[in-house]
Length: 293
Image 1 (cartoon, rainbow, N blue to C red):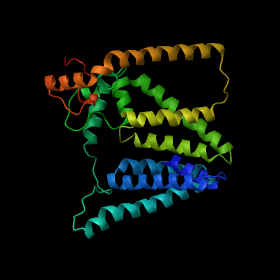
Image 2 (tube, helix red, strand yellow):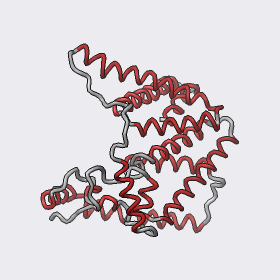
Image 3 (cartoon, rainbow, N blue to C red):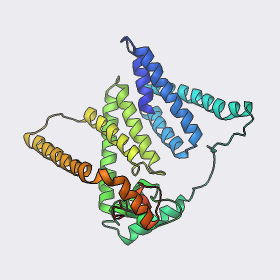
Image 4 (tube, rainbow, N blue to C red):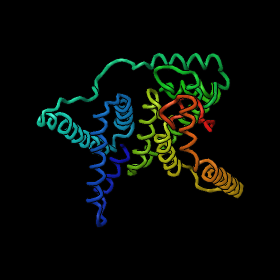
């Protein structure tokens, strides 16, 4: 959402032929995202947005226009949400039923957080294995909804400390770059997006769901490309990246040729054999099952 706000602002200030039209489209997209956010009633999203824009106000208020665009989209998004889910249903005689954005309580998180902490205490060095919190079935969730506890439980203390160090040093370096560059709104938007994701990850599965993981990879990649101290690549680094790319191509090729054609049949067979549901959400059983044949 901070990046959408930046793109809308950037194209509104640009002078190319379709800049204003593109800015309107992007702002409308941001507005619709706000409407969806009000509909879903995600308290974690409000936390992430509050943290990232509090960071903007405190650390680099010179980019206040990003906040103005976001606030405008928020007001219009709430107007659209209220019209669609309250006024229109009242007109047609339907009782409005939406999730309360101001609800209280932990929604069972205290239970799964305690489970993750107990797993860490039982396996402090290496954890129980990636994504294997879900191997212990509970009635609340298949992941802890808290990134640090999940790292501790599944990867152990050393890996968690390394991840926290990388995240903290990267955000600190990005902050230095932003505060030294007076004009680049995109750097502020990238930094706020990452900060918001890190805040949301304290109460939700940002580092679990493939969709959010993909966006994180894209956003962090953009940030790295802009904030890197040097863009020079050594010959050995080039060879290493090419070798890694070839390995990835072979792995993907094997999956596409040997596994993808029968994926649906294997998934259905596993459901019938083990009585699991919600495929392909492998968190239900802790691994990606292919033993249903």
